[in-house]
Length: 532
Image (cartoon, rainbow, N blue to C red):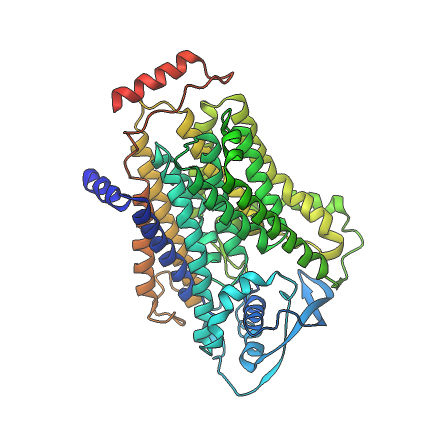
């Protein structure tokens, strides 16, 4: 059985092009399953992003400001939204989820049907200040298809973009010699929450996918340099950086963080080789242009909302509340679906955390000093960045932070730890492959469990039948079909961790780090030769 699984996995990655196509198909099926199995309006702020996408596709990049009374987290205020002219169905979309959102015990069956009616009306969106690039990329199908079908097609366009980015990350991970380690890092980074965001209309999806690509392409370029692969890696890193930066200005912080830790872990001379390439400067100029465009757009579209935040919500109080919410944000990064009213089951949270912690502990066991600094630095960033961001924004916007906002940076932890395991762990003396395969298929299993759990919330409510039968609400085609499709695709991600390592490639040069002696390196080299 193990031989058959390994043989199948090896055929999937026989060439970079085939691997990209296979990875794209896997992640598109996973993301598209979320697209179809999630009721329209049952994801965070999707109505605002769908309205923005449809408006941008119709040339309404700008719009007049409209102050809309609103209540968020029990805080009243007037939100500065953007008014656009769209068909009436987009106005109906804003209230379609009212009967069940924030009421997890109620199914989506109570939602009224969305029907296309003639004429247009003024519709407001809270996403009118966001950079239009993503919205045009996903909104154009609404020009040719109408009604709910247009909304599903927008979701599928977002899933397609995100899947292409993650597929490129998979190819970068497979270029390492012990690629089963690095492929597990990418699979772990693509949490159920990330896949959920890939499948709905929300800029968080491509932001997370671009973060996965930036970490996956940047680390091998500096830690495991190969002149023959440098141009491809630069292209992937540049594409990921442009997408990450264009989504929102905070992308500059995520990219800078990935670049900093990549340089910290990089080998001597790797940066010099990168800077010698002409493509480095071309992609650098493109990234700078993207950053300039994003910053110019952001500065020219300020948020003029007026929110009645409590007088006692000082930066210190906000920072402390954010620290206390650390466990909640961790859950939200792994799986908190719907409008944050459908938590993933405990099994998903425990297994996902266990794999990340295992990768970190194995990396630390054989780490050099700089490796420890990098691992601790990323962990500290995961804790400190939300505290700092919330403290700065508390007086203006209130307590608005969510775990998914940090995912473009946090995905770097499993990817980086997997890369360090590749570089530092000895080749012999432990059943690494068995551990990696078990981890990959365990993640696949709990990923399916999370999907079924979220589907159950929408189909029968959290108080409904455990086996979703009879279902009050069902996605197009019925829920059993999408559970089966998702299960097959999730198990395929487990196959990625069963691929053979690159035995034919030479080992990297011996390290001279303060925590790795020459004797240890020679032992590692001898162990690798004995296994080959």
